[in-house]
Length: 351
Image (tube, rainbow, N blue to C red):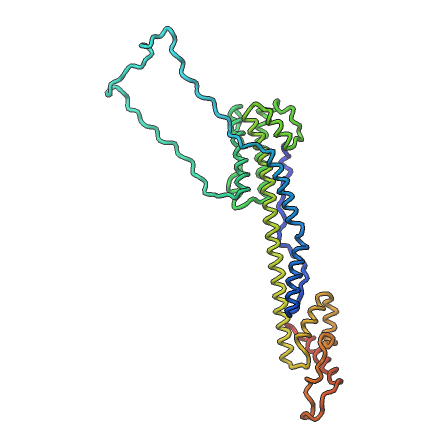
């Protein structure tokens, strides 16, 4: 029925911006860009493939619970004030009829000042939060009416519209838990004997079924609105989880794209620095192949880069300038020499 106050009904969901290891492609060609887009979509789909299904299932579950809800009741009307007693037979109409007064004799009647109207709240709540606040207002009205009927001290509820603005957060459920427990204190003091047939561990359906048979309208409203509050809290939590998942998905997409762009910028910088040296090697091919290998084996790829860079891109012997004023043409052996020179250069290169 009512949970222990010490039992937090909901805890704050962990931050959605935790660090995650994400493997990214690093080439700069059109084919690799197409591969990146494909991998990005595949990654997001694989990470979040069950999210939409889970959300829809939870929404369907809430929809089933909502079917059990009653139309929102209003607090029972207060009894009309007692009508004035009719004149007794001993009294004549002449004795009971008011005597006319002249204008000078009639006392001046001051018009009562109009009662101040409560200020309308400027806070506009979203659909889920508005439904929850409305349900709690029904519960509050029932509890305050009940406390007045039984001369009990009504609790001071801490639930306000500000609590649900701009959107519901799981941490506020503790406030609703305390408020409903305070309300149950009044219910038990006022109708403890009437609730003897309601099981201590009664579920929502049990409470609603009990309320349907209850003749006391105030108690009936309190029980129905209590269940409604629980249902609307669950609805708010599902909406919050849906927003959290969508935010995380957008964050993952942004992070993947940013890391891909950073890798592309680093590749271009490496290529430019190598091309400045006029080495007889295809700098773009060298760097791109290195980064592709480094994704799977960073240490091994680095070792190959500084010891045998020709593995990633062959030395172009034809581009080695001839020696002795062009008299001695380049030979394959010169390629071995440049392979070592390029490796030493890359060993010291920092981009």
